Length: 344
Ligand SMILES: Cc1cc2nc3c(=O)[nH]c(=O)nc-3n(C[C@H](O)[C@H](O)[C@H](O)COP(=O)(O)OP(=O)(O)OC[C@H]3O[C@@H](n4cnc5c(N)ncnc54)[C@H](O)[C@@H]3O)c2cc1C
Image (cartoon, rainbow, N blue to C red; front, side):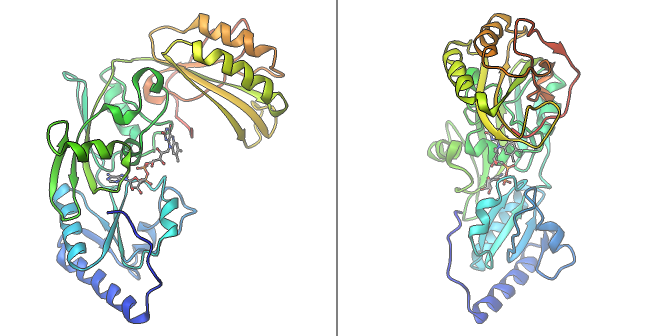
């Protein structure tokens, strides 16, 4: 299902494609199909990344695995290509392709989430969002290995790897995947896990959406009721000293801490020293605040710190997000209620 770049179509070929797209709508019955010129086509092609302007031959919005299979089977018969997308967070690469003969399969109507607290497992549809999984799992004191924003799709994140707060201790999110149901290029719906279609299951965990359209994901959840997260921010002029101090501290920090160093060009904000800033963030997946490790980080880093920031927050994994904490001896946390997440 990998998209291939293709030469510019002749007028005759373009007409063929238009006919095929119209035929697709007739072949897949109740599945919602938007064709160029339809009133809803422009709205349907708007994705999370609004900078991306895609003009596919048709947009399909299936609601079930059977409908996904019908779209893939019909597209194949009509010589159309297929490109799955759940949110469009990573729609950027699609602009490199001529989509004149491609059906965009939008999974945004397939967002159901089921959590089984007795097995600490989740089963979600292929277009589910992390925010929905977080809420459903959090209601049982369980956490999923979500991304930094609640509107990131489970699909692209899990198929691509997925690293956020829990990665150092619990691994990449895709390693917690236990099974998928996937529609293959011939329209067949199969289950892939450690016992069936093992090679496919192996390839899917990191291989992205190149092997078919995943209609459901099953993955493990973890008994984590609370996560502490914070971010320290420095003036860019201190970046070199901060990076060195962080590099000394990070390898010895407890495994429960996942930490990253970033150089960011941030919008102006009273909490941030100036437009360019060096940032470090970390998280803790244990029941208590890692006072010793944070003190050590603070003492190493405070010499480099030109300006202090606000304290860290403690929150449900559900809505954890990099808040900003105060480097220095008083770096104990302050409790906050669940909050919205933000871009990572
Ligand atoms: C605000 C923001 C925060 C982020 N935070 C993190 C983070 O904390 N950690 C991290 O590792 N990454 C993070 N990312 C990167 C994110 O994981 C990737 O952009 C990911 O591809 C998004 O998946 P999606 O399903 O939402 O996007 P989409 O653009 O819908 O999907 C990306 C690609 O995945 C494939 N795909 C998606 N769903 C399916 C499916 N059901 N079946 C088959 N193929 C499918 C398709 O090839 C699609 O083109 C973040 C991105 C953003 C924009």
